[in-house]
Image (cartoon, rainbow, N blue to C red; front, side, top):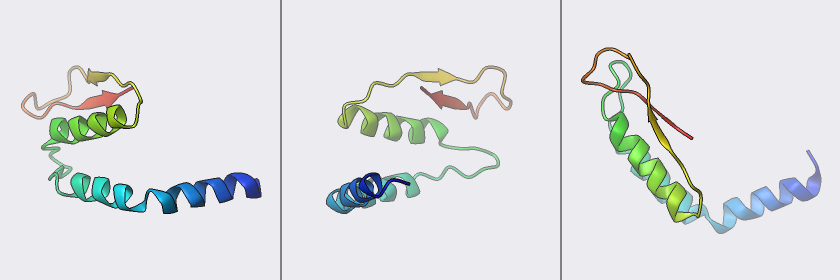
Length: 77
């Protein structure tokens, strides 16, 4: 890896450490046990909210035909 790129990545992580930790805590607090896959919608909503907050567009797609129907799966694009 280019040293300049590595330095930029490390600097960005250092500058945003508190925000990164808070977002990680938010995700860890969502009980997305797998199996069976509960709370996926809550998790993808938290991720999409963060993407919007940092200026990125996203789209949520429900994965069709994934049983059981009371535990749907999602993809974020």
